[in-house]
Image 1 (tube, rainbow, N blue to C red):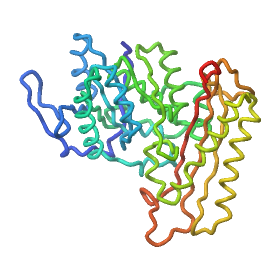
Image 2: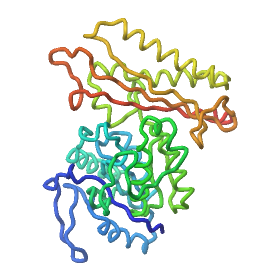
Image 3: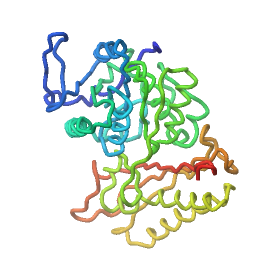
Image 4: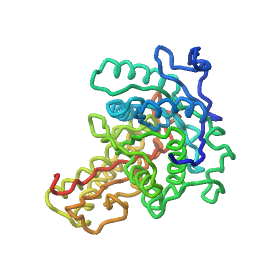
Length: 374
């Protein structure tokens, strides 16, 4: 298997160690588990590799679901998929600082270790009762930053010096244009996680579609012996894609946060109606986004929501490069990003969201399927 070195971030955001129990074994040293469950908590690279060795000998399939915690139903759907296809599921919980820019929301990113543990314990019991699963959640990998970056964390600056995995030009497009260190951080930490856990399969959600394209390219280009499985985006009843960052929205901004989804759906309708040219498809999306914005601008500061559209894209499904026309045999990817600005005139007692409702960037996408599959 691949032999690259790796480690990650949780040092300053240390996990709550009291919320565990310790079990002694005749064959192993004592180890931590999530309360009321057999799920092991592994905090070091060595502990993961020690746990992993018997799975090789027993020819057991290991599936990895990488997360940054703040688990929601989107994460759980990936874990369920992994359990159907793997004897052992490993969930990593690690807030990787390398994929946050200097001015981004690392300090306020939700850390929900205790609730995440409870969610995983409940889900594992559900999986145990479902006879259709091949396996269950066997372990949570919860490393610290010094563990993940043994030479020291190189920093979040664009010109930081250190050991990175960089895939160009895809990491410079769309999300990479606004967040120049994001995909460098994602690819680096995923390479580390893949090397540590050495899973047969890794599971990602389609909501972060450019991330899935980057990871698939990394696996292909570096010939990593793992399969990338992409699960569908899980949405709220009104279409908003589930995201750990939704907790920042608060009640007022949450009502308008579906603007991106509705814009992308309008563009998708053009494609489904047979329009393949970029102008027709994106014009429909931009029209919806502009109408939403005009409606909000007409309201008083006490009621309105301010937001900025970063981009709405029509891109190639393999390269994420912009298309002038969709090839119906290949399809395409509609994607976008919107920055929800802080509430302009908060009202007494108003729910502003987690951490006081800072600006929050939301992303979404819709895959335009090849015409033969539409």
